[in-house]
Image 1: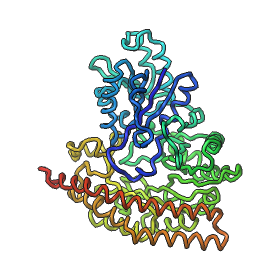
Image 2: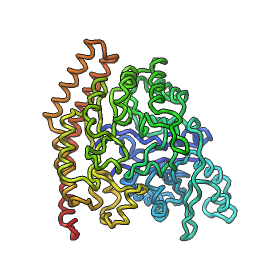
Image 3: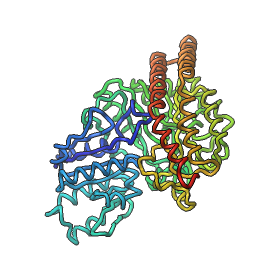
Image 4: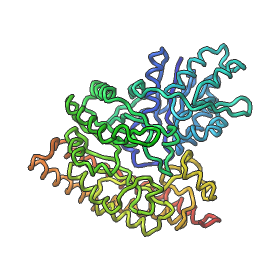
Length: 508
């Protein structure tokens, strides 16, 4: 069979538009389908070189669409066009949005939704599908067999069927994501996933629900095999570890830690060093890792030069909502510890929690500047489907229902804040915070101070990979210049949406 995977483009510009990498879901799923004899190809619309080949889509037997919430409207447009061009094809949907809005997805033309994860359910479904005598007609026995496959949602008539949670598989059985399946993709950096799920239960996040409260990790041996695989194909390409937290603890059913995340990260770094795989690495960790300077030193030796950290907020009243348990008075000190070990910081901030005010947002911006954080991502709080936050705001009648899913990108206010107007939050984040941080003076100051810091570390023989560090500072410079350009380009649509909120009859 010909299987076509599609990742729809985002509705507008975003922080990673210029450094976009495909999500790992489809590249992880389809190599095994290829091993089973199917022809597989993936299109990622965000990549200019990967525009959809509709001739190929019209010949496909299966069309797989993976979507987040903000890309869902575009996904439905693609599904509708695919249905017109190829009515005999079966269209499958997966990803977080379809997991929690499966009825909407099915009513929009998707035939089957794979909820949560699809590592087991897709291949169980594929075996069922290939056994059908007529793929357009599902008999009673076919329906019974289909209902035994976990993690599915589908319709018969007007009735929506949801099966139980999908069967868990050993993460070591995941295929190494093969990005060569993505048409036209010439990577400048690659994303690796060594775990799935999260050990925290933040109100604004859907990860806990998405993965059934489970946190699963790939063994050190399999991670090593992935690194060797990519090194053989792409050489010393920069790699981003896209785990929610590369140093997350593994816990048992009672919440007791069984494997320390710090120990796991230590093992990963030592493994990289022992096998001569040092390179340019980055990954998502928590700020509290700064309290383990020995691990930061080891990360630096392995070639980690950038950490993506969820700072979320400097407002201590937001601790419960963020689930971060950060010591807010120490955030600047902990940031400096990363810098001390030659690791740049990409800070991810969320603004609009119930205790937030215009004053606390201004203080957050000031902190990001004072701590000389290399790159900052200021996002408006988003009540995404599947999160406890969305359920609470729906109960409280605080969702702006006129805002479509394409506004759920962190650049648009889609709910009514508690201590400010919706349009005030929009202006504070998109029209003031972003331009203030991404100005040329800040950019030049960070570039010079970062290079001076590395030079001192090099002279004192504390920089194991000074070349990688200096290169990282140049990348930071480019990212900040690109960020400034993005801020200017999104200024008009952000201002238009601000005016739309301000003119709203609710005026909330």
